[in-house]
Amino acid sequence: MQEVKVTFRNPNDILDFVSRVEKYPYNMDLSHGSIVVDAKSLLGIMNLGFNEPVSLKVYSDEDCEELFTDIERFTAA
Image (cartoon, rainbow, N blue to C red; front, side):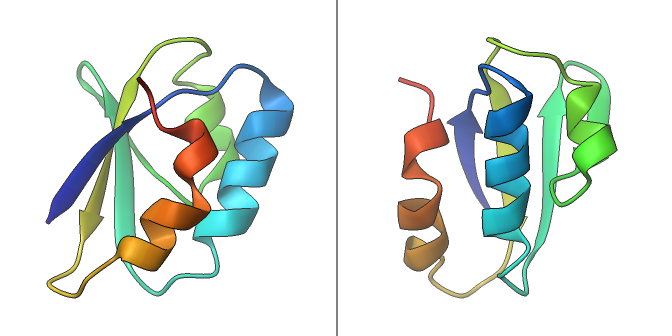
């Protein structure tokens, strides 16, 4: 499993994020506090809110560097 923090500023960020992660075969979750949603679920991610860092967990033993490069603009500082 690999983990990174991401942040969404508006609904368009979420639309862009979902369209990017859907291309990858990995199982992924986003979590904030006790809420955990599928990272490929547009409605689920909307429930997490905006401007708060959320944890993206990617369940893969493979190197996911291409995925992390693709979603780099969402990575929380």
